[in-house]
Image 1: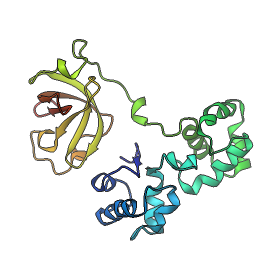
Image 2 (image 1 turned 45 degrees about the vertical axis):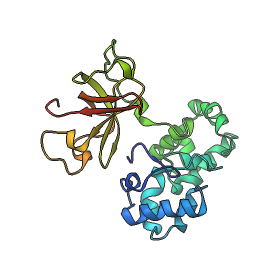
Image 3 (image 1 turned 60 degrees about the horizontal axis):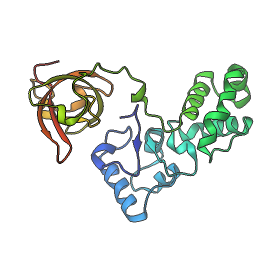
Image 4 (image 1 turned 135 degrees about the vertical axis):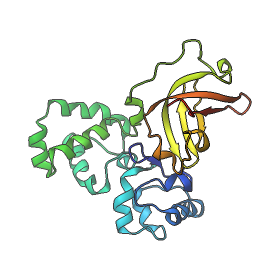
Length: 237
């Protein structure tokens, strides 16, 4: 969850609990604040949430995304502690951080710059600067898109092609408290319920699978009307 990031304005309490620094009480308070005040418009608003102090803010801010924010940095993995460095970088490149569509084009200039020298001018380490540049070049990117792709069955392209009992290969796209969603190449992720993740008892899904894992699954049930696919990993991995 921390490597992918979470949309602060749509995430459920159970999903938010997987973010570093957020416990069940804070997760509920985040959603309560969202329902009472409205969508979060910046990461700074996190400090207005009950029981979310400075320490928790330091831990969770970089993992919470706000696509609606006027500051594009709020929709990246750049931590607020590095906002000043990122802003200086953008200013040096003549880029407005409120115009995300221009970022990719303007940041191509970085390819011709001396990153080591630039890091000294900005006052941050080279690794940090490279991370900032990578985030700004693809704001809102999903790192799962860069992961190895499984080999799908060429005769299974849509949900209607699925049949109970089929054994397929897929990629874990999300891990939640009640199971994992797996991409099996039919434009609709299937759910492996926590009870179907392994032959043994599983207390927490993340003990068995991680985002990006390539796994074998068996089709248990296909509900075309509700666009739901039930899968199992028992006896396969």
